[in-house]
Length: 467
Picture 1 (cartoon, one colour):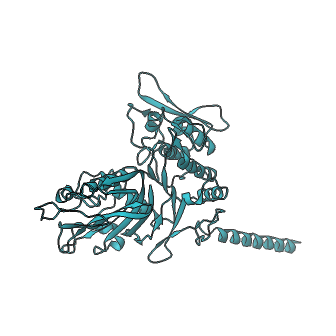
Picture 2: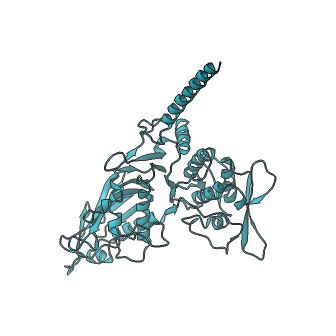
């Protein structure tokens, strides 16, 4: 789970500043304000981790990727090729990370990791993307126990030196050459282990980083439309897909799973949990997935809406149901320890359903499976005032601690733009409510009252004249 994030010189952001990442992390802002760029950056890093190209610093994405960012010049702030993209983040580790120095015998341990890096185009030709440096800190109770990184030697493209503090690396005899360039944006190359007698632990740091981004799942703002039939050959999908295309397959694959929705809550079958949430949002009365026949691998999704006695196919009900179904399934389908990045999960939903969706998200971060907390982190870009208002209410009611919610507003009234944290008090009030946060609502109310008063006065004057 991410604890903190900061991005510099990426797309519209000169500097996001330090972003506190909570189990529910929200990003608000007008269209084209840059709030989507936060998720795009994280997905670019994930694409890079998953890429087979070990030498590529970043993977901006191709046709079928979650994000497609183009060239470095297209992603760097103000398209300035001389600017460097810098970033840092910290994350918690589910199990204590420990390693023993084989030379000194000293044991180092930590419950979290901090990472930072800087990359940009070569000063020579302004064409080659190079990693200037990377650094890890193994953290224990917010204090660094080991610091190690790699720094590119000036005026070179592939020569790096290893830098370390609070831990001494001893070079092997006869190793006078450079230990080689990093792997992608984050990885120590195998040469570092070969170069030093006691550097094997850097491979564990590489692995921890890869596990972090492989736990990240993305769901885009526009999900695929509902179908009347779904084919499922029995394969368990990794996720519902970027557009929700694997939603029904995920439901079928999870039929043997049981989810609890909080402390001392009865566990329920996966499909029942999804149906319950759809009902609580006021979208349906009942929900089921049926196999067409034993001889076919085709399935149909049947829904019974409120006030109806008939079961109908998914395409025959409101569009909002097909759009929110992948959201619900992904939230409960993702494995424990997942980070779920979603854009506009409330899209096409009635305000009442948007409000109820906030309660679903609280259930997600409190959910359990096999008697253990699932520890899900939700990173959500949203436009929904109703969603936020319900979270404020739940904070006031102590249903969710304010520490488990962080919210940021992309403020484009300033140059450069700033990402402003919303400050909640213990009653759920936002102490620094941004101007025109959700549009000019009060202006509309005032102007409506004035227009109504003017119209009444005009009608009264006309009545007097007619008499």
